[in-house]
Amino acid sequence: MNDNSAYRFPFPIKVLVAEDNEMNKLLVTSVLSNWGLEYSVASNGVEAVDLMQHYDFDVILMDIQMPEKDGIEATIDIRNFWDERKKNIPIIALTANAVKGEEQKYFDAGMNGFLTKPFKEKELFELIENTIQLHQTKYASNKSDEQAIVQNTAKHYNLSLIEELMSGNRESVKMIVNTFVQSIPPSVIAMQKACDAKDWLETAKNAHSLKANVDTLQMNIIHHDVKTIEINGKQGIDLESIPALVSKVKTVIEETIVQLKQEFELQ
Image (cartoon, rainbow, N blue to C red; front, side, top):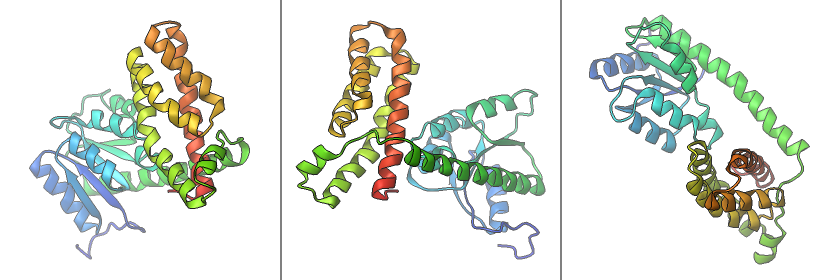
């Protein structure tokens, strides 16, 4: 670390660098080291998505042109994560493509900003600083929205069945609830993706996998909806109604997870 560097962040920042070019990789990581920042490196989009799934970062510097999965594809994958903190991480595109109009593709994919290579140290520092500040303001607002869900929305679930099966043991109930919170998101995401692709059989399959969990938590508000998605998807009937039902189920489950995390003080 160079103590003479003019650039310092007032708080620790961990950066994920997604870059396949060795020279660019060295340039970026050298700058980050000079700023005293911790970082990890991914050599392609697949590695970037995998690192995001397993570790926490504060910002991603995402190259656009990478093998296996490019920066735009990796960004879309990350924006489809269930974990609110991970899916909303600030992502800055670093691109050698200076074609006018290309930047709109980055924003459409969910990126927060972009910088054309080669860039100046001051430009990178200011972009990271501004992007993180905007993110922190927005994320604080999102946390307030979560509190509003808990305070203003009636519970979507009833734990009486689980409590009876667990003989009222609170820790055992918490363990079951935590399993729901951790395991249910992938099925919801898969159902939404299948629905977006109009793969109705796959949509029905994922709805079926959700049904037992929904019934165990006695989520009566979406019991009929999940059942309808499964039946209509399998039989290929009333398909135009499925997207709205999928959207409702996804929203209710998201709100339920917020409520359960609040009640049981889960992460």
